[in-house]
Image (spheres, one colour):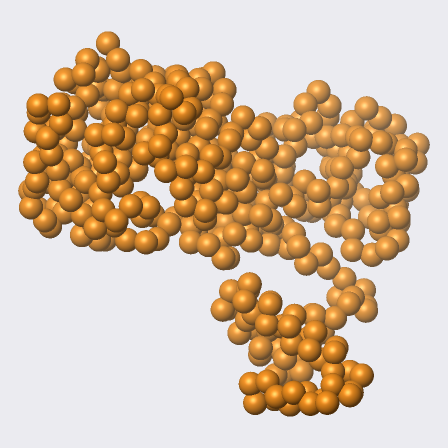
Length: 405
């Protein structure tokens, strides 16, 4: 029996045909899910006949972990280790592995008390008094059956005090994986890790903190984006953060960050922000809306929603000037007052709103909207936007805190 498919003929009487079809299906599925760069590399490997990396490990020099390699090679690996070791409070951590590597981490691992022991798989850990009542971190990656047997035996002796570098780093592979497949505003793994750890701030949180402390606050955040702003809210001590996001790619990125960093006080909730008000979500200490207001197709509804959610509102975003965006002003009427704004057409990317158009307000009129409703407005920062990348950008980026009087 034969069947033609896209110019190829398969003989179903051949016992290998089913395997051939399965292989073709696997390749097609892989090509669909992988990036073009990865597919090109795979194709080149197949053409050259060099498929050693796709085969099972057959020799010692080919043994490697194919999952956490990106993280092990990251510049921020010491910072990552510093972060994950904080999850074991009350005990000194003992890091076992290559001495040179462990010592290279010492300068970066600043906030955790730890010791190092040079160790390899053939070195026994029995009756080592320096390991008693301490967290033991095996910093060599197990890639062979006998190494996993060693870990299993060590667990029988040291119990939950024994952890492997693999289990500590695996959650961060979610971030590295998504960065290869989704668009990130911060496209470098090392750069985004620094945002997540609070080594870099995406938003001027220090200035916001002077006006309104985030410590122990219940916060609702609109548009978490890559999760960098969420990180800032968490790092400044918020008790809880509810993130509102309508785009699947942005919710996935924020959830990956929350999982990797252990943000148990963060929830990612998928909803259109026009639907988010106190009737549906209750009230919060702070409504945090940075870089989102101008994506609203019904801006007064959105601003009213913010007021229902909290008496404290942090708002940040583009404001219009006479020349930017390069469209004329329109007057929007609400409750007997007129407000200047410029209408623009949305794109369809991870940085765009989910509605066909939005409005960028005149700076003074946006502030006036809150002042007329008995809110005290404190400007956190304001700066001109140089060399706008798109016509949708306003000429000013404004951030302010509005507090009900």
